[in-house]
Amino acid sequence: MTTHLWRPSDLEAIRVALAIPVSPAAIRAINDEMAALERHYPEAIAGARAHLDAIALLDQAAMPAGSAEPPPPPPPRIRKVTRKGAAGPVPQELPKRRLDVIEYATELLMEEVSTEYELPPVAPAAQLGGTAQRQRHADALLLILPRLSNWQQPQRPRFGGQLIRG
View (cartoon, rainbow, N blue to C red):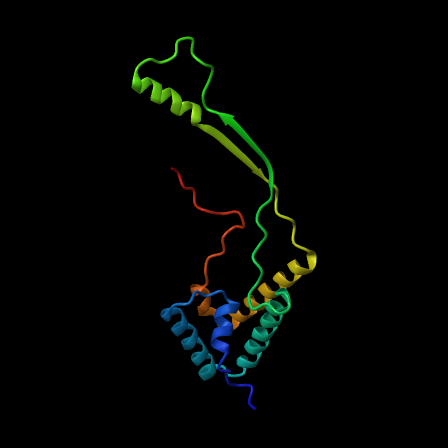
């Protein structure tokens, strides 16, 4: 068997290894890059396949045995919950009009709840080493197929997110 040809599963392996989203345009770009590499520099295909195999092994080792998908992260643990009522001291003269009574009673029902969560546990060093190894293989794969870097999802910071006001 020649090492200068792609395997049928290599397109999906490249997509997963580089975390490229599933879309017709992205899949076509991967296919075009694979075809261009096969035409212009077929000797590099063996190296790319070696990186894909290494990433697949690292991904498989990170999953628990007998599982098809990674386990969900544990729910965050609550450290402390504090509650405060919104109503202040009782006024000397209670409201007499109907609308004032409704407004006063609604304030009694309001409360402010504040929840403090524990920090997530730090990943074991072996798992972090696997992640760093996986990233090195993905970076090496991007050196072989450089135009695919445009199709990767931007890396977000771990605790990043959108600010939503409401």
